[in-house]
Every structure is written in C-alpha cells, then in structure tokens.
Image (cartoon, one colour):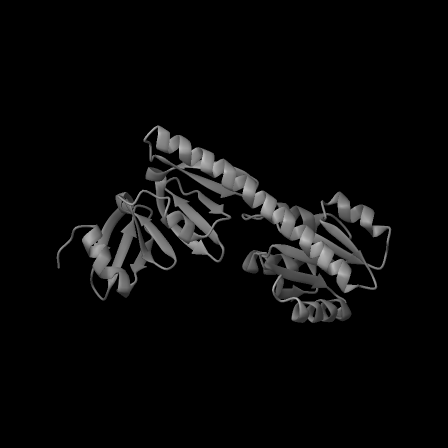
Length: 253
C-alpha cells in the first residue's frame, strides 16, 4: 500500500484539525504536506508540493480553480470534496471528484476516500507500466535504443534520447530538458530513468541530474567539475561522482 501526499484547502480550521487527527492515526497511508485557505494560495502550494490528492472544503464562485489545475505541468492531483451542503456533491462530481465527504466528517468516510484515490493511482501506474514495458520490448526486439518512453500527464510520450540535454529530479517527478527548449515532466522519479537511458551517453553527475554526454559544450574543472550544455545551462558534478565521471568521459587529469 502506497502512502499518498495530501494538501488541504479550507477556510474551516475544524476541517484541517480533523484531517490532521486522522493522519496521526493513519500515517501509513497519508501525509499532509501543506494547507491553504484560498484558491490562489492553494494553487501555489500545489505547484510547489505536487500532492497526489487535494481535500477541498471551499465553495467556488467560478471555475478558475479547476482551470488552473488543468494547466499544471504534472499529473493533476485527485480531488476529494468536503461540504456540509449535500447538493454540492453534484458540482463536485462534475469536476471529476474521486469522492465527496458530507459533514460532520467521519473517519470511516475519509478512509474510504483515500482508498479510492490509492486504487486509482495504482491502476494508472499499472497501465503506464504495461504500455512502457511494451515499448521497451519493441525496442529490444528491434535492437534500438533510440527512444525513451516518458509517462507525462495523461499520456506517454516517446522522446529521442539524442534530443535530451539533461534530466532533473523534482521530488517524485523528473523533468526532461530537450534541445528545442521544451521541458517534459514525467510522473516517474529520476532513479527509474537511470536504468533506462543509454548508458553509453548518459551519466548521473549528481543526485538531481542525469546528463547527455553528446550535449556537453564545455567541461570546467576549476573549483570543482561543471558541465556547460548547448543551451547555456551549467550543472555541477557532485564531488563523489567526479572520479567516475572522469572515467566515463575518458579524460585524464
């Protein structure tokens, strides 16, 4: 069972207190990583923290919150609505809510909502795994190591490895920086791509970065190791990886 990260958006202090109390007793399945009292504050927090689920206890005047959610560069968090107004459930499910919790909040209803969220996340992950595995099998059969399958938002994109400048860890996500300036955010962590990217050209120079040797414009060894790329970005090589990196690029001090 996975643990999901949650953000609470509510003006009602009692809602936050109840959910915090719930997490104290059920920390194995959920962690609260932030809370907000307004739409704008909530959106900024979502962009920063990238939760799997949002508990929403607000009455919305318009659709701006949901429009901003759809513009996120990463997987849209699952929504669980909380309200004392039963008729608000209709609007909640209009916006693809995973569940609706009617006040007063009961822990059993929170548990049911969380398990629904976890089940959907696991189903989505299983589907992506199957599609990516099929692509990897085709690559192996054709003896091609030209593309990498990137699970991004609600689709899987095929990216030419030669077009990747570097990959950057962003929490549980990975950002692919491409030569055309495009940035693609994957729902997979950087460690998973370490085993997938062509190890003849890709090297993990830092806990947060995997680089493409073909895109390095210059390497500086003054006051440490630094790689400058074709797009002008400069990234550091971690001290503990410098010796291995030196061997990888076949340089001698």
